Image 1: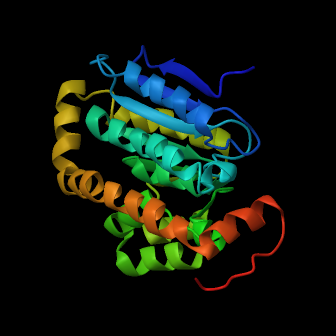
Image 2 (image 1 turned 60 degrees about the vertical axis):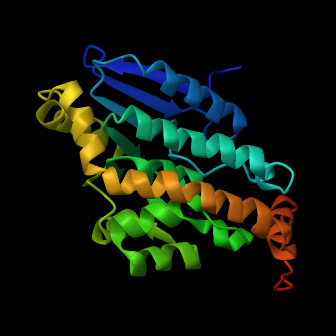
Length: 258
């Protein structure tokens, strides 16, 4: 079986690129998250790394976390595993970038939002559609208000609508927009050579910790609270379980508002 995370060492090891490798959806299931966690753990003592990049194999970045792993019995383990990735990125304090083509949804968008820089090509479609399944997105519920303000975050989180690359730029989500994937890959390489490689890897990590002090404190304190809300309260409701079950059975949900 092919690895679900492909790892590339770029610029003499100064940049590490992780590719989510399960096209076309590149779903962040337990196996992929475990591989990604192991790769992040491997970076702990690599003091020369100046940037970590995330991208997706094929035409899409990521459709999100595995819906079967959202069921009541699986949700606690899934959320713990998924949120551990965010805590690891906080601890590493290495500058991060997401290179997004195609669909970037749910947990995939949360991973991209966690990054310091978000590069898009014109095919990108971004959204947090969890509410359509009767659930919510814990990391995005904290990160989006910090990045784009409460009103615009509410729009995305409470409607579940998908936005185009152009709208993502207008919302302030994107660092830079490119015409195509190939142009994005080349453009980001040039951007990294100009803005990242000339810097000290050590000093960058202090700068990340400083720039993200409020961001990291908010995430690390409040994400466990939202995880508990999700597991203990949301998943005890009829509608959350109905939303997941209806998706898996490919039928419309029958909400009972309880």
